[in-house]
Image (cartoon, rainbow, N blue to C red; front, top):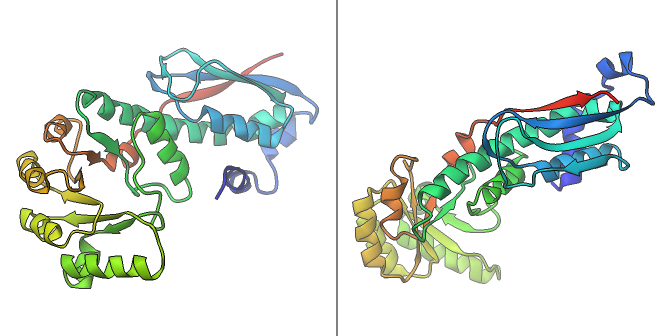
Length: 279
């Protein structure tokens, strides 16, 4: 789904047969202005998307930006102002705010994780624990906050997780069958395999033919042991149970990536408001 399709679908969900509150009391030719007010500190995200929403509804809207995506913002500041028909402003208001509040919350939480490990080479990854049909914008918010996107979906990377391995009959068989499948179908996809123990790591190393080894629910000490065994042959990713309180301990291990689903599914939306300015 591209941005235009998303905006169309979101507005259809909200407006359907008409914005009757506005139609009932606002003349169709009324012009207005509104300002996006920031009501708490954090990292702003979604301004570009908000601009596209207003231009979709009214190409002649005048959208003036004071903050850009990724900026650190403080309570009381103004992110943008928009001049358009009042009908456009009131129709776009909630969609723009919903998107920006969600994206800004994700960007803010991601930045907290990124800042904690900025002295280490590890990169913060997101996961597929996202809101259906809003994944692209949640993952964009992760990038805005300084994180790195993992795969976008099931189609752009092979991830052999515990259920794949168990249903297939073991790590070795899963890796061998996956490589055969990619070769037969001429697919150029990276392979990541999840491990649950140091023994799993040894089994992956014996087979090879992967790109990244996930170390799932390991302690930092176990990750250090695994990294020593892997010895730089493959990328490494720590996953599972990683929080703001313990992420530095994981980064210290020398792991390449740290995946944190919480940067999306535990993010709290930023408080923003779109206030009318009477012309």
